[in-house]
Image (tube, rainbow, N blue to C red; front, side, top):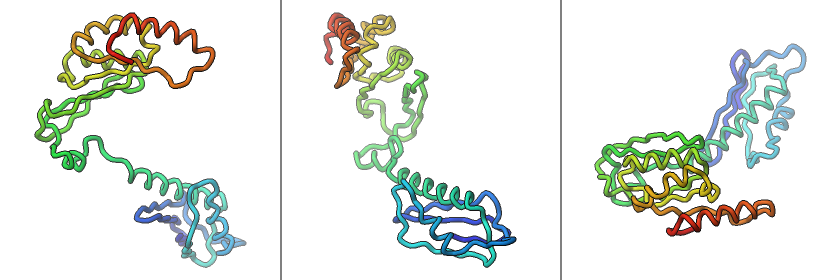
Length: 227
């Protein structure tokens, strides 16, 4: 930590090759009465609470006579540790269709492939990528559909031919099998050789048994492609 009178203080925390620096919201003040004591400051900063971190070492660079409210010090520590945790988590994320992943499989990114994901509100969000792979080289997709809005978005995308035949299987939530949207689109999807496999929960609560029985009858009547 570094505290210089007249400037914003900062606190850098590190774990392995990941680090994060947090800054105070206000400049460090010159103490009017009681300056920060190093021992008290160290004790306050070492309180990591329920975070997954513990300090191995703590270096302090403090101007003599510095002052910051304890509330600001607590905010600074919390912000620094939250930022470090997020930085570590981000290091385990990888980009969709990243170049490194495709390189390992011997492929390059598609030249002008349009991909669509149905979000939680059913809106279709186009994603474009660039490279030199044809549509025929893109692997088939299986999609879990949880809401009627998502069903409408993804079936509209398929039936308009925008998926270039690359969506092979849909897993609709079993409750969708009783909706008018499901009945409306089912035959057209099956004519396109799309497998429809209703997704059932592993565990049923007692009050859900009646709903399950109604839905399973609809599925047995309408489907022959699987569960």
